[in-house]
Picture 1 (cartoon, one colour):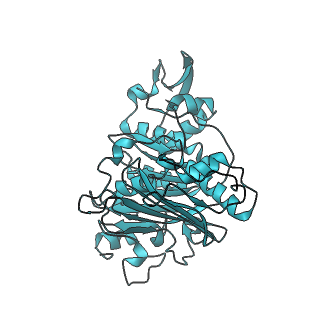
Picture 2 (picture 1 turned 90 degrees about the vertical axis):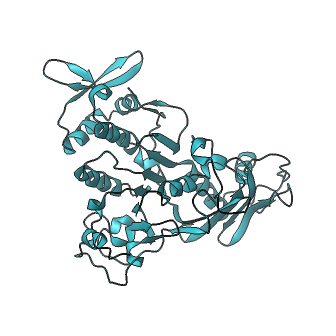
Picture 3 (picture 1 turned 120 degrees about the horizontal axis):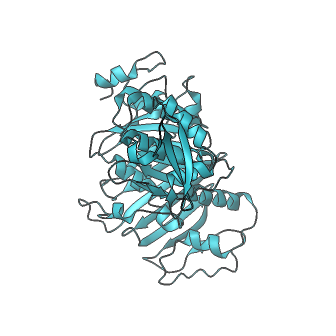
Length: 384
């Protein structure tokens, strides 16, 4: 059985804008303001590729069941519902507001950095579909804002929007999407940051491979994993990945009713891939489907990324993700065997509970060094 997900375009773009912080209030399990800061880094001289411009480029989140790791991913991807036309999963946004909070709206604040310029996008919603307010500042200057509780008029300060109608009436459209679609912005520093901000949001991707397999962002529509791997000419590379992961095999492909399918090749016959592949092998196929277009993804969040992996395969996946220099990557897991300075560094491992999330470096007064066995320290409760 094929797990259908979007058809992928092969592009050659690199990300040069990064998410540095998100602040969340009154959304799902987050009652009071919850802050996830990716710029709280140190000056370690190992695994330096995990940090770019002082911002975590590859990070892993740990936390007990129910602490909100998945909800953090949903918060990070809430903005694609109103800023893009990408695929979303509205089912994950039921019970949108925190049940212990009496306020009638959730609040979000995203901070981005591009070549030293900071862009801050703030908005509030009553539910998944109902925007209340929006505000975007670029380099400490207001780009656009609206508060629908006060007026249907929005304010915008961007060259190229002078003739734009600023009354959105009863429409629930995002004013940033409205500006982007209905104006020809002059080529200047502020507008270019805005365009790159919009591009970043359009290329964000969330996926997971547990019971409710899903993805959000990046694309629309659906196509099969097998078809895209073959069509993009990556079947041999996928075969090599399986063999590197200890799944010794040879693969072949056939076109069936206009769709490519992948087969395991045995001495006497060939068997369709998904009909006999293990859960872990299928999970690896899903990972590779997205990995083959890593250069096009701006921000990748994989929830329970190694739910079906042996710990050795988990390490292989992390090493591959570290190579995606143009993609900011955040993973969640329960696998403590990969808490290692051989893979990442202490400021890239985050401990999360219901009230806060902090890198290991902020969970102890002890000076952490490359030679420390941070998994052993974690198991000994050295990080609280």
